[in-house]
Length: 297
Image (cartoon, rainbow, N blue to C red; front, side, top):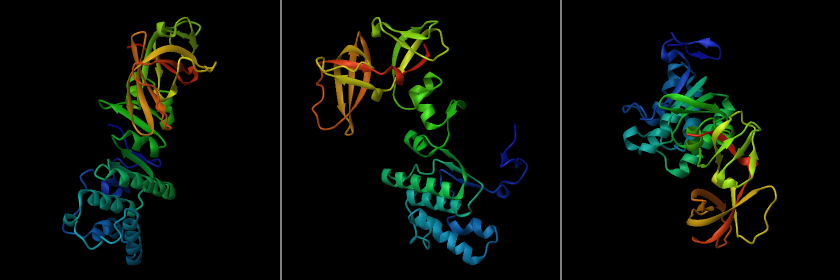
């Protein structure tokens, strides 16, 4: 039910090929009897554009996806990733009003995915094409989208900018799905102060309207670890903890620390130091300004 509107115009009853919408399918949907160049040019030819314009735009689209020399080949002579790139080129060549992308980069290697999403974003900005991009890759969604809609079981949970979803999740699903989180159980009183046994007698002033049982949401990179005898910053809340495990991930060290029987994950940038060994005592720093409050489960 409902209607489809593009730029204020109702296109619900218009035939799909007349809607001026570009679609990149996850399964490529290339015509096997056509060459790569013919596949890319198909939409342009259907629009009766001059031959010189078709040739120029076909070449430009193939250049964009890194297949400038593959125009004479057939789809069955290409790898899966190359076929997907032809599908992208075919769609962007027509410069549609709306571009629909169904996981268009899923068959590309990691380096090429990063290159292609950068190129797709640049093209989108250049041509001003409204683009709906379906992906399961969080990094892909957060890096290129102006707005992100996160769905769970077919229901939109939150729509917002990437930073809004990451910094201000509206529910536990979003908080868990977009990035990694730690949850501190506690409660919020009428003065909007969050208290928890893990914080001792200290409280965190919040801007939530929630009152009662709640969880404090903390991102792993928003926590700090220092040695027990290190100088402590007054703006942070410090609690005693112990390192249980650690995992080296190149750019940062991921620690699993325990405080009062509660496990928390902490990500610390790696600059060549040995870090904190498992079994050692540490001070865990919590920045109240980087915390979010959600209803308790």
